[in-house]
Image 1 (cartoon, rainbow, N blue to C red):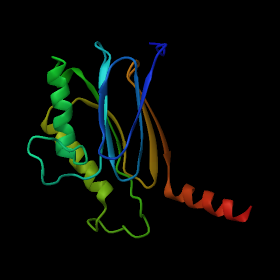
Image 2: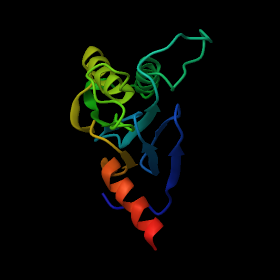
Image 3: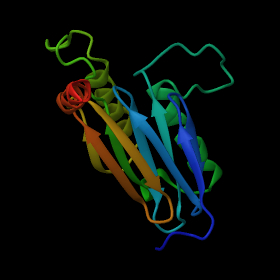
Image 4: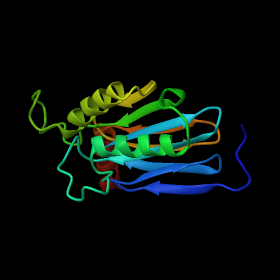
Length: 174
C-alpha cells in the first residue's frame, strides 16, 4: 500500500507505547531497550512499544507502565481486545537489546541489560501467543526503527559501537 496523504508521525521515548491506524508512522531509537511492533495486515492497525527493563514492581495497580516488558505486553493485549481482534492475527517483530558497553560487559551474566531484555521479549511473546515473524536483536550499538502501519514495513538502521567509535575519532581528526 502507498503512503497515505496524511500521516501522524509518532516518536516513542523510552517507556512510551502507541497503537494506531493506517495513517500512522511510529519511530524510536534503541540501545539496550526493546521495541516490539504488532501489525494486523487486514485491518491495517498496529502499534509499537519501547520498553527499558525486563520487569518491575507495579507502583500504580490501575495503570500500566511501558518501561517494563511485562506491562508493555499487557498494553498490546488491551489494544488488541479494544479493537476486537486476536493477537494471533498480528505480525510481530522485535528489535533492540544492544550491548551499549561491549568493552565492559563481556561475561555471560554480568549485567547486560540488553540481553536480559531480549530474553524477556522472547519469553513473553511466546507465552501470550504472539506471531513473531522477524527480529533484529543483540549485538552492540544502537538502532533507529521506523514502523509504517499502512504497509507493515519496519525500517531498521543498526549502528555498531565500533562504527560509533570510528566516527567519533574521525570527527576529532578534522
